[in-house]
Length: 174
Image (cartoon, rainbow, N blue to C red; front, top):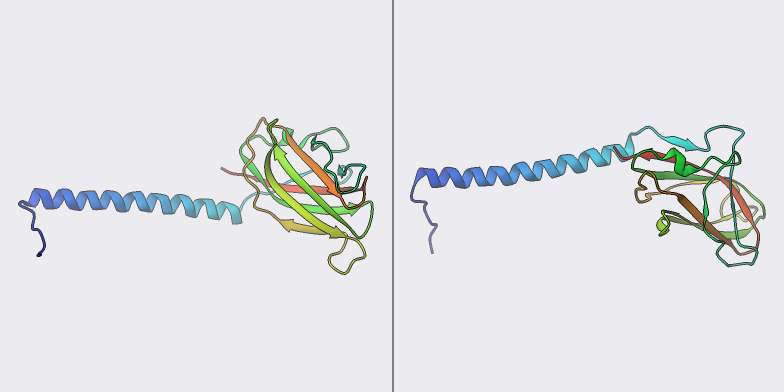
């Protein structure tokens, strides 16, 4: 079976215009994806808490290997991480600065809204174990958090009642 030849030049032009429209749509998608990837690699990073005399402490449940209740992320001056998120944003890094007990396994989750929509989870061992030092940072690809929603955490540890101090780095998505 041979190739079908359009009956008129107008039909050929319409087919070409349709194909150009498809190519334009694909180019738009690629440009949006490229812009998003660029934003992920080059952006202004914000830090919480914002000052050297401010801290954020996560506390595990009193019983080993049991989740704590969800609690809003707040610094030692009662400033919430939620209050800092003024546009769609996401966490890019969390840095563990100190721990209350060495050589134990910690696990925590970060979520937003009353529905506790989880944006990230992390597990670490810190202390004298040769795996990682007490201070450790990790890059994360957390889901976006909308403004106006409370941001929560919950944590558990292989030893009950443990705490860790940490800070967050985040950026806006626009």
